[in-house]
Image (cartoon, rainbow, N blue to C red; front, side, top):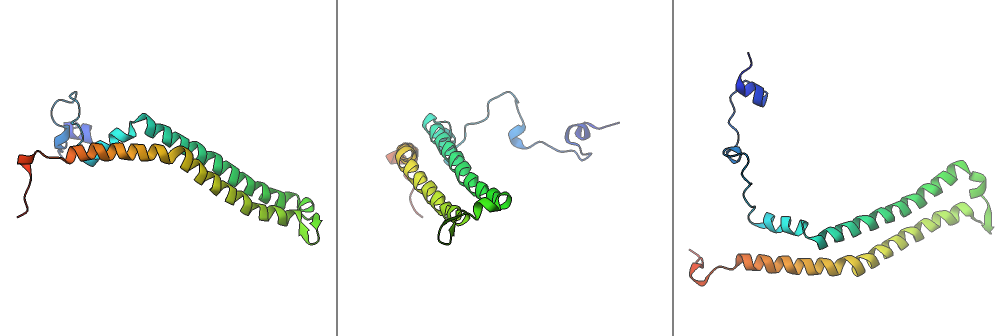
Length: 151
């Protein structure tokens, strides 16, 4: 015969659920307090979601571009050495030119990243940060009669 605690918790040792789980299971959870409340509200903000989506879209695009350029260079080097050994000018081969182009691709990706963040993400983040700081400032204010004194 299986005891109630074994069936519920997978152990024969009686276990009391944590105090947060006691009581009415259908009552809403208490509202979070402190810094977590501000973070949850900012994560639910539509502008925050749009900034996160813009960041992910650009990150995906930049990753595909950079990794794609590098992998195409590796694949060409491995499977088409005759193409990569074609001379362009003097001792400069197509393989060496494509290898040097990797630096240009990474530099262009970094420049586009900075430009995208300054133009599309930073203004929204500044606005959201100001809203959160204003909200936290209002939460921290105490009435004049309730000031806490140092020991």
